[in-house]
Image 1: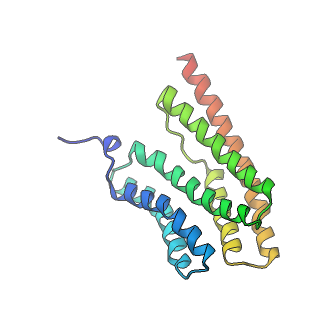
Image 2: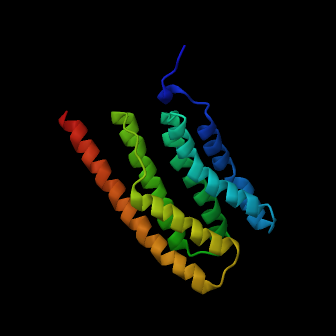
Amino acid sequence: MNLAPKQIIFTLANGLTFLRALSAFPIVLAIQHKSLWIYPLIIFCALSDMLDGYLARLSDRVTEIGCILDPTADSLVVAAIMSYFYFNKMIPGALWWFIFCRYFLIGVMALVLWINFKYISRANFYGKISVILTGLYLITLIFEFPPLYTSICLYPMIFFQVISFLFYCKTFRIITLQKQLV
């Protein structure tokens, strides 16, 4: 029995994405204990985030679960690291709440689109830029860069987080209006 790519769950790309999601907690432990394991963990997260989608497209194995799992894995890793820094008073509470609310609302919009219309949200250009900038910001915190470098990453990160959120809201509105008209 041949399964259509969207029905397949166990693929190399999905496995990489799942491992990235699971790496959130070892990353926090490595940060907390100032372990050298942080280096391979961060490299793995960065590479798996770049490679999973590429491998899925290359092997013609783009799956629905992969499209949902990829942003979920990113959110889990960011949420775990940001929460560690927040609860250890290393980032302002307003920043943590902003990041948390943004990811939560994007997740709710994606869930509504999936449940009601079987529509899978895709990352927009600004969302991809915000993920890169968020990663850079987190690296400045993890490796205790001077505050100047952290600030240089912080403000563009916030800007692109806001812009990408507005684009997600726009997409949500367009899709819900289009689907209601059908």
